[in-house]
Image (tube, rainbow, N blue to C red; front, side):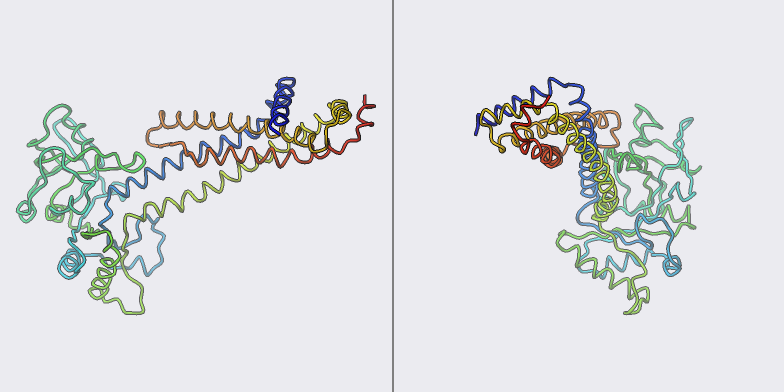
Length: 416
């Protein structure tokens, strides 16, 4: 059996060498299909890891209470649009009444994409449209992604007295001060002077988007005095043990429903979101991409398979005399089928290997040229793509192999 297999393989490679261009064109459909699978799978695999890391950075022991659904487009029905704002008193109630909660801290934010434009200026240097957020002193405890690199966080006394102090994101500090030490310097935030007391650790955010680098954090009370018109509160609620997260969410929902007068039969007039929403949202978004890629890859593989079948049928016709000679020398139908199936699988397997190599090269190029779009080769999809290419060879090589095996040896020997 081993000798027959080796002989079939040698015959397959000899046939490919005899018709190099034809073999290359036959492989092309398989190569395109495999490249599609490998490259897109690498991007999605890398992004999945990126999203999971970002969710972990936000923290597994925190959830957020908001007025509107997180990351929604704003086309809400009337009963959502008329929801009351969350208040500072809501955060205090959660802090005092939620037994499973270790902290509940509110924050307010000026968002550039909501038309709330801002500017941070130091002498002749300025940064346009940073995110300005007013928080309490325990915000870094609730969201560990906010980590002080230089200086310090403001104190409770500074918050109580609406002190004009600020902690800057790394990108903002670098843009304004360059190599100079930013601590103790005075910047102007929308014309108001603030003393810089700290700088956050570098953090570029999700997929290269806005991250901690683009934030200016000031005391909660200071923010409220400067921009009283901004009422959109977000409350970060923390627990000691991630296993208590679900229980704490239920407790928090009950407290807020009572405070906001929500009747038992009515749905919540607020949203509770855990960091898992990032991975859940991403899974929904990538589902369509995976489906589309699968369709494109399947079409390419089918086209490649049809090409393999066509070429193998041509090969059967061209080698009719050879088939008759082999049968006259004692070759069985099974031997002829194996020979032509081996040739078909060899063609598609080589196409699969070429596709994997090209897909890996493309993934590497994407990762090097676009750092914000992580691409990481997935062993699962490499193996899957190779198995798919072998399967295409087997499926589309069966008919030509059966046809070759069924030829009459006498007729084959007479064939010109």
